[in-house]
Amino acid sequence: ACENHHECQSGCCVTNSLNPQRFCTPQTIFLQCLSWRRPNGYICWTHAECQSHCCVRTGPKENLFCTPKTIFLQCVPWRKPDGDYCRSHSECHSQCCIQLNEDSPYRCIPRTGILAQCLPL
Image (cartoon, rainbow, N blue to C red; front, side, top):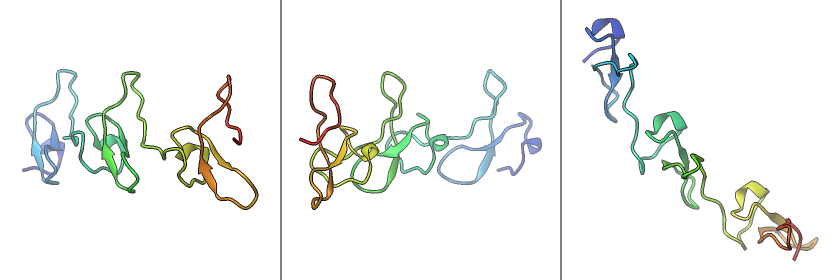
């Protein structure tokens, strides 16, 4: 075990598992010291903790998980389906959160029309 980089012959003292204890490890071919990162499916709090660099909600619960990026290298969180209550467009899969009339709550609704606009039904 180690506490600082200078304790290691490689100059690398990093975590190599969920265990917070640090160990001497070899540098990469680019002479970097890389800490262990959580694989997909692990609970996370920031993108930097994940091998995929993607930490998002994957369902209706509040927990964040390491998740693979899309083929376009985007990190896409789970969003509410049409019909669910919402407070902002970003919460909805359709990116459309609308109050259908003055007395109703805001809900996620599908986009409509040729231009797929966010309009009341």
